Every structure is written in C-alpha cells, then in structure tokens.
Amino acid sequence: MNKHKVSVNGIDMVYEECGESSGIAVILLHGFCGSSQYWHKVCPLLSKKYRIIMPQLRGHGGTSTPNGVYSMEAMADDIYKLMEQLEIDKVVMFGHSLGGYVTLAFADKYGDKLLGLGLIHSTALPDTEEVKDKRRQDIDDISDNGINHYVKKLIPKLFMDSKLGKMQGEVYDIITVGLEMTATGAIRTLEGMMQRPDRSHVLANATYPILLVAGAEDDIISPLDTFSITGEGITDSTFGYPHILENTFEGVAHMSLVEVPNQLSRVIANYLKILYEKMEKRAQ
Image (cartoon, rainbow, N blue to C red):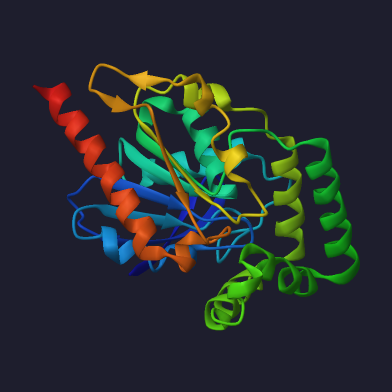
C-alpha cells in the first residue's frame, strides 16, 4: 500500500492507495478515532480489480486538525477536493460508521460523482437526543481526562465482549490507531456528528443499488438503525436488482472490517460486480 499526502480544501490530507490503477475507483472511509488502517485487511482482497483509495478524514491519522466543527459536509468537501486532485470523476464509496455519515453527506451534495455507495455499520438516521447526550458526555470526558483515556475505554466497546480475549492483537492495533487522534480532533468530530441531519432520502432516492452492512451484535449502531428505510420495499425494476442490498453478519459487533474481513470483502466484491453489470447494461 502506498501512502501519500496532498493539500485539499485548506488541509493536508493523508491517504493510502492500492489496487488496479485503471480499475473503477473505490473510496473507503474509516470510522471515528480510526484511520485508513481500518481497511488494511479488506483492501488487498479488492485490489486485483479496483483502484482502492483510503483517505484519513480531517483530525484523524496524519491529516490536519483544522479549526471549527468537523461537519459531515466539510468532510465530504475534503473528499470531493481529493477526487479533483487525483483527477477522478466518479467513484463507489463505502463508509464505516462515521465514514458512512460522510458518504451520505457526499451523496447529498455531490450525487453526480457517485456510481454507488455502501454503509458499513452506519445509518442515515440523525442522532437521537439520547445519543447527543452521550456525545456531550464524551466531549466532557475527553476534556477532563484526555484522549488516551477515552480511546482505551471506547475501542473495546466496538467488539463483542466474548471476542476481546481472542482478538487482543486486533483490539490493540485499533487502540493504537485511535491514540493518533488529538483531543481537539475528537471533540470537533463529535460536534459534527451531533449536527448531522436525517439523510434517509439519500438512500430512498438513489439511482443505483445501495449496500447496507450491519453486525447482529453491534451495540454502537444497531441493524435496525442501519436498515431503517428498507421497510418501504424499494426495488430497481429497470435492472431487476434490489435497490437495497442488506447483509447482517451474525456474531459480529461494530468492526467487521477486522472481525470478518474476508466475509465483508466478499459482500463488497459482490456489490461491485452488480454495479459493473448495471453499468454494462446501461451502456448497451
């Protein structure tokens, strides 16, 4: 994997890239207190056919920590400017948790730049008042006790309790990634997540199939919240594919990217195959 740094939207953004440079461009966005490392087990399994780009969102990893609230729209603007820098016109975008919120903001603002999208342990719903209160508590916790204390408490909650012993190495790696955050970056991101609107309309009105992935044991974002719009039974009758492709991983919490990367990669690869077939039919 190759790591690069470019200036976009007034910040220095770090991103990693792997895969087939002439293939369809796929952007993978990480979750809160994460980095492109979240996708390291998935990327090699997709790289034979696709150009995989894994940015570090503002305030995360080696990317700049600018002033102001890190709204989902601002992060989407960063990704748009990165695409301009890389001379990429259209992409397929997958977002894990926070990355899913950014993906939806991107789809809302730059819909003509997307060939498809997937939410991985994420949701189009806004924060409930209960969740907003929890984020305020997190902000106070970080302010009072520091980012190291917060990250070491947060990361184990992303995994099933029964797997923590077996996945000690993975949990340690994810904690190490989180410790790259500054307290300021984490607080500004929490503020941005609290402000995001309901974007269910993005999923309902999409002109391409949507991939939704949830963990049956996810205590951060439940499958019910991930699949919140699917009750309408929307279908893409033009090509015979479901409008919404649902996948629930049994025995998995919030981190399928590292818990079951092979399984997640197969689901993503199948979705990309469907998109490619859809584009081929449109071209005929």
